[in-house]
Amino acid sequence: MYIKLFEDNPNERDILKVIDILREGGVIIYPTDTIYAIGCDINSTKAVQRVCQLKSVKPEKANFSMICSDLSNIATYAKVSNDVFKVMKHNLPGPFTFILPATSKLPNVMMNRRKTIGIRIPDNYIVQAIVRE
Image (tube, rainbow, N blue to C red):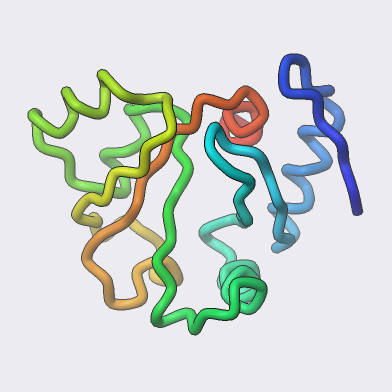
């Protein structure tokens, strides 16, 4: 299925269609502030495995990043020192991925025995709308 979203003013119904796809274990391609990315619901093992298949990587070797809606969400999934938080606050949203120590709340499918996770808050309205929903 192809859903075209307009960055400045995405149609809410189209955003909800994307959310339904994600909730059903689907995979999407979405814009960020740097490149297009392949994404899925991090709680869906089937969807994460599909992303690995599309990228031709083994799940246990994959390095994933998470999109968060704002800085308040990050502490759930990553350990952030005060100094790192200040740097993140100064640079996000923006075209950066911060590699941080993971917390135990990160879904097992994302951990793959890794102790870190990439965290992003893209400066892109479409991504922000999807993550908020």
